[in-house]
Amino acid sequence: MTRMLEAVGLACVRGDRRLFEEISFTLGDGELIHVTGPNGAGKTTLLRLLCGLTRPEDGEVRWDGTPVRELGDDYRRRIAYLGHLNAIKDDLTCRENLRYGAALGGTAADEGRLDAALDGMGLSGLDGVPVQVLSQGQKRRTALCRLLVSDRPLWVLDEPFTALDKGAVATIRDAIAAHVADGGMAVLTTHQEVGLDVARTKTLGLGG
Image (tube, rainbow, N blue to C red):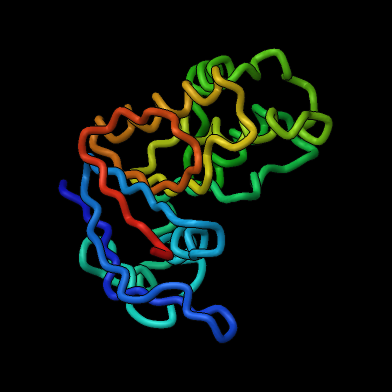
């Protein structure tokens, strides 16, 4: 089944400043969009618009031709979103956070996949340790583990490589490439050169 994310004439205003306008693109299966631009250009705002978390000043976001505001939670269940905040529960362990995230999506966690994800991100020795005592890098890796166990077709990632060491960067880079190669979609921002090996990549520049 072919899927399509479409942005049509998106515009965003912050205060008396227009961050961007007339942003239009399509994203299909097996494609990645890299959103670029200086700080303050509206990259994070655009990603939140694509997730249906905020509404644009003008234009609309569509999933398979239907405005996402009409789809509501049915659309959001198709998205794996990583923002600047990790959105993890400090009183839970890494594994418990992954189980909780799966339950929110309406699925039971596969323990084998959890083991592989935690091991791949260097977190396998932290069972029984609440997230609140971990370093910022470990918390970020916990949040990113959700990607490694996700079956959601659309990944929307805001600076996913921040606060990661080289090994974790390589793991997430390879996971994004594999997700897109398997027919998934991804939209991301990053200031880092991480050598993403994705054949069908589009670049969308803001603030130019």
